[in-house]
Amino acid sequence: MQLDQLLQQRLQARREASLYRQRGLTDSPQGPVRKLAGQSFLNFSSNDYLGLAADTRIADAMIHAVRTQGVGSGASHLTAGHTQAHQQLEDALAVFTGRERALVFGCGYMANLGVITALMAAGDAVFQDRLNHASLLDAGRLSGARFSRFGHLDYALLDAQLHRSRANHQLVVTDGVFSMDGDQADLPHLADVCDAHQAWLMVDDAHGFGVLGELGGGCAEVSGLLPARVPILVGTLGKAFGTAGAFVAGSEALIETLIQFARTYIYTTALPPALAEATCLSLQLVQTEHWRRQRLAELIAQFRQGCAEAGLPLMSSATPIQPLLVGDSQRALQVSEVLRQQGIWVSAIRPPTVPVGSARLRVTLTASHTAEQVNQLLQALTSAWETVNAEY
Ligand SMILES: *Cc1c(COP(=O)(O)O)cnc(C)c1O
Image 1 (cartoon, rainbow, N blue to C red):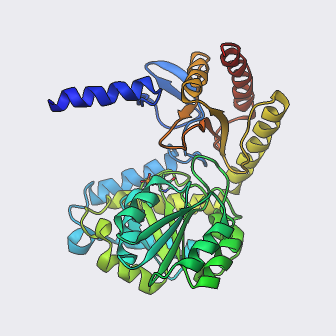
Image 2 (image 1 turned 60 degrees about the vertical axis):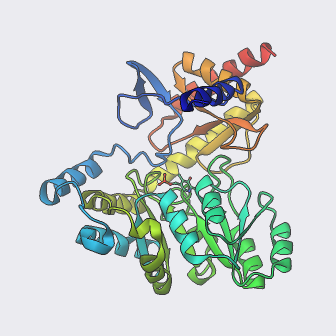
Image 3 (image 1 turned 180 degrees about the vertical axis):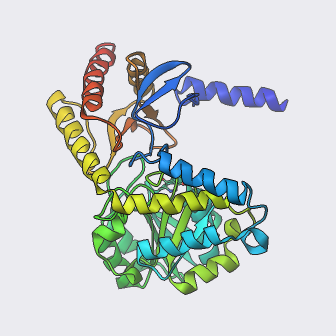
């Protein structure tokens, strides 16, 4: 069969299953109101939780750095691409996370692949929450270690799996805040289970950093656990930090090991130094502009109360990720489409991003939304829900 013919069949099957993905083409910066094909939409689909992605101070810092340092880093970190700006960001992230060191990666996907494949190999075992981010699951499979998943937040099952395991080394991996559900890992409990089996704990807190904790230190800060109990901590910079890239924070030995062995760190061009410089400012704003987290907390409370009053099927979440469970993929698309007609942009999240039968509308709130905008969302959601359910 010709390649294109085969691909057309696959694409058609995906359309028929209501799983086809389309990219909304925007022509305005990230923010609560965005333009799609010239029309304005209220945006409840981004991970820009603190509203920093289009912050003009961060933009100015980046422009200034580009003027003085140019755009491209021109090389990988291990050859000639590691600059003062990268180093400063790493040092600042180490202080921020209370770890000995931090290492900046090109993105979160690469950080996760790099860490797990550098640390684990055949003869070892990796244990993951089944709702972990795709990059973690892919990394576990790629590592060559024995790979098991446990039920979401089912630490009793994990405990039993660890107990049975005869692997040389055991790595337990979890999202801090689960990206499509908004709920959180119980880190103290997880750390206890890991300690009981001398397993290592890795937490990817892509959605917790900036959002949770007095200083935005995420799940690790909230848990109050000593760094040694969460020896591998991953964060991304493209969500609450509003820039791009990711980091791993941990001990001196961990970071040196990653510099030596993490292939997604070694064999790739360093991020533009100006981006690192802009992120240094973003990191300061994350820590000092507490009002952003306060605003978020108010909006989350308002949204949850509104949904409860309207009888909407909210999932259990205290974070800016506030999904409404629909179940059926086609129906989730329909609700999203009806909202779109009312000028509201909320993505329908479908398998394989979430388990089959658990399609949902993933509403995300940010510090730059207003109470009025959340009210508009609630009204539109209530009517969209009625419209779509009336058709069933
Ligand atoms: C977004 C995300 C990633 C990937 O980070 P990028 O920098 O976007 O590649 C990794 N882990 C989790 C939990 C995420 O939500």
